[in-house]
Amino acid sequence: MSITLAINGGSPAIPQGTIKPWPPVNELDEDLVLASLRSSSHAWGEDCEALQREFAAWNGNKHCLAMNSGTAALHASLVGCGLGAGDEVITPAYSWTSSAACILHHDCIPVFVDNEPVTLNIDPGRIEGAITERTRAILVVHLHGVPADMDPIMEIARRRGLKVIEDCCQAHGALYKGGKVGTMGDCSAFSLNQNKMLSAGEGGLFVTDDPETLERARSLVLFGDFRAPVTDKPDYHFYGLGWMYRQNELCAAWARAQLTRLDGYIARAREMTAVLRQRLAGIPGLILPVEPDYAKENAYNFVCHVDPAAVGYTGPVAYYREAIMMALAAEGVPASVWQRRILPEMAAIAAKNAYGKGSPWREHGSTVDYDPLQFPVALAHSDSYFLIGGLRSPNTVETADLIADAVRKVFENLASIDIDELARRADITLYERGWKGQSLPRHSERSEESALEG
Ligand SMILES: Cc1ncc(COP(=O)(O)O)c(C=O)c1O
Image: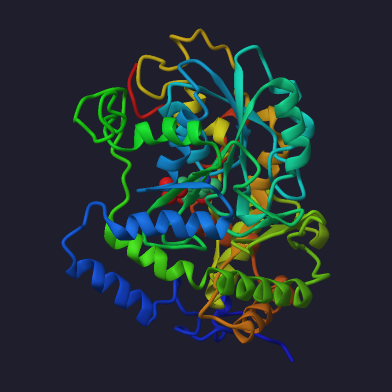
């Protein structure tokens, strides 16, 4: 029996409205948020204080600071580690922009290391080659909820006298050799934004076990007036360059309610991704994510890669990826691509111009090389991956089965789609890489120029 794909006019495999949005909201969320709303503390109060205690206890850290974003918590991590102007920080070439932006926020210089192909995290074998006399820290990202290989990273850091910051923004509850992420480095950052495993709409959490690291980070959170020299109460003096990174009570109340269900969320996501791994195994042209032996991921993202050679498609891999995604979306699968660029290609970094006038590279005399071709794994990944969403509560393993049916339907009927035609319909300028000299139809201007002049 021939099946017509939805992209060709057939019925979608997953009816609209089947996949429920994230995060689930129940009575506890409503009770805690309403109680906060009816209280007289909104900027800071018992919900922020309690969230700090409860998250520290849940994750196994001595200290926690509630902040207004994961990016802020990452910036606080650099401060906590005592970094200063012109210091170099090593971080993976493919990650969310914040993993590099937080380094620039502190007037430091990001130095990239290629990702490794299985976990897509920083490749520990390439870190030593990136260390210079200016290197002060390694900012590790547990990308897509899969822990980076921490033992070799910690060994290098301790031997070379470097601090380690864990970007756990996507990885709440992921385990490395049985230990939770965010407990191995000098300090760590978690995000509470809407898509995260622990969501409060927005927010961030900084954690550490070291009181001095805590105190340095705390000095950044609230305008720089947190550490009065004479009294332990703020005296509204500007002791250091501070930012306004404080969390608010409503979001903290919601985070507390969600935290009570976080273990259950992770367990459900792991069950759902297990269904996909089992049902989609062996499909030609589709590469499934692998959980490394040393880790238990939190199943934050289900990261697939396309393999056009396996089905005889010889055009650009990104075209094949785009066509597959369009066909999946038409079937009702929440398929998406997150970042299409690696960090060294991002305009402000490629142009070495974050603050204008070439700052901070110019004043620190940095000659760090951001040629993207140094990062072949990150480049290949960014061209060929896509994410399958909808694999979390309140959805169930039955939903995962429906998603698996829909993905199978597309891959089993690939012959009926015109990949080049679909890619033409998509915005293929997104894939254009001027530096590669590819001759694609239109030239995107966004890759070379920073938003700031000079
Ligand atoms: C890996 C990574 N780092 C940092 C962040 C920043 O978190 P936030 O959006 O809370 O600032 C995010 C999420 O957006 C992320 O995915």
